[in-house]
Length: 248
Length: 154
Image (cartoon, rainbow over all chains, first blue to last red; front, side, top):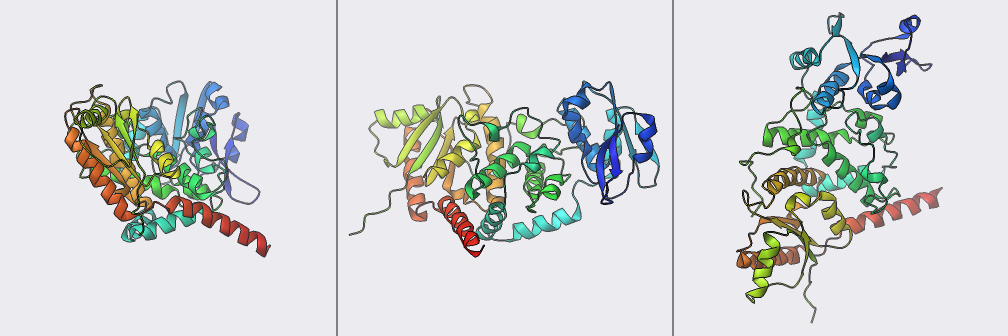
């Protein structure tokens, strides 16, 4: 069972319990923000016979998206959440999770929308300055990748050294390339849990890049992520009538 | 007399349409700007956004990305997939404040040698007006400068 417990510093941390006597440890508060579905990619969890997951909103939405990407087929899982009325909800099928997510949660937080509106109101050069300043602080710890439930490739482009796509050292051009690549590979798949931005040790709001991408994709192609087990991937498909203004 | 700025332009083109179009421009003896270096790809669907980033990093001032018109793809749907990716990539670059005018997207068929020549000429003029692409180089320099200043203060 994957859930949260209270750490020594009184903050919630993810925990794994393997027998019923440990259930007392589990907590579920609004502070339990982590996205637990990331652990479903771990080999130890995959090897377990049955997995229970005490899921918050973002975990539920990534479970839906991961199902649509055929990533959870082999895992027999029980999904549990606690709703706004403090009732325990146990889901037996992913369709139930899907309905619950659609009925209960907005796609974007107001905070995100505000930040995005602010950034979009800036001029291009101001945005460039903003992002390069942010990226100059990046230390390439790849915590944003580790924490992301959608970053499950077994080998990543950043680790490729023949050719070396992304420079290993933490300098701004390479940082920019890393964040561009991350945003592009998550565009249309990101479920806006905001974990990458929350986890960043130097406070770069990296989640805004993918959030903006998702808004654009929704606007351009009408595709939403994390709402349907059958939604698929917007960049994996096409419509002959896709509109653009810039191709001559 | 100062020499005029000659931009470096890298063209990522598909094998079946634009490369043949450029070939046609050549065999028809059409004159066009010599600033362009053509890189041939099997299909526009193969043109990864990282290749564009790398071109800029290695000193390109402008980029042309071109392939078959919609419905003309040799592989049926490569350009449709590429188009979706370009739409997303372009809006990401714009959101990050990158000058998207430095990348020209186009459809040029194998019969459009003249269109290719005009495209190269127009792009060259556009990039010439914009000047050298320095934003990436500046980044490295500013980071180095910042780091060395930090080291001095410590």
